[in-house]
Length: 249
Image (cartoon, rainbow, N blue to C red; front, side, top):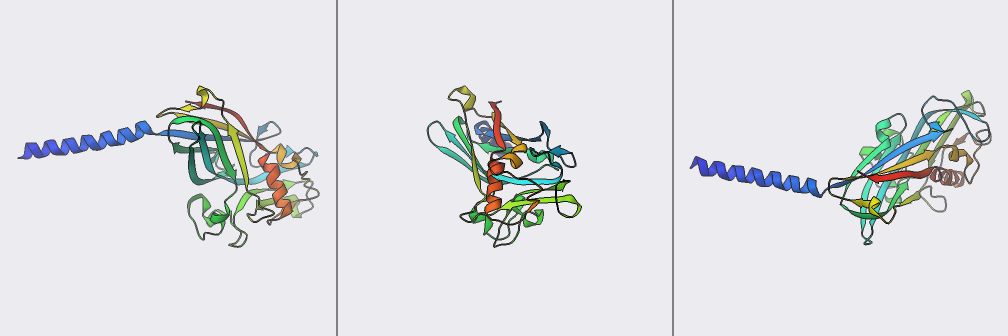
């Protein structure tokens, strides 16, 4: 009797492995790679930069939320990835965001800067949205979408400090911004089983100060609450993003 039993166990194990392998065969991946830059070089902690107005600055903290990635297939169907990622320039591993998706021909990528209104009022959360990560104001104001801190000779604050804590999800000064990338209508967007669609995003921090709403440290060294100025800076930050290239590997 032991041999038939052994055969059954082996067949069960084989079926389980086949099922797992089948799932792996059907999986594909979206990988986002971020490259924060300023003055044509990597944007790093404790490095010296100057903005378009000639103001010298040295950043010490730079964090922001990206999430809610959506891929549109050429047949019109949408793959939604309901997650948030906290990008931190003191943790270069956070510059790489990898998510499982289904294979297919993709034409469009949409993603979001900031945290949606529902998550802002959903109580204590975990992972990247854990309030202990220091990216949360109060249940009334919600999450800090972006935190940029440092020192500048142009600042009128103590020790030349500048602080930009950008957030807010309520109209008319919501700081949530939607960003998009289109893929060429050819094989470049065709993602097969086991393959990765890698999208490289440049984050040009020069535009943070030189965007549609000029930001001079000498005039505005701190923005610490939601409101009109925070929404304007969110516009500037959204303009920092551009897709440098994408490829299926």
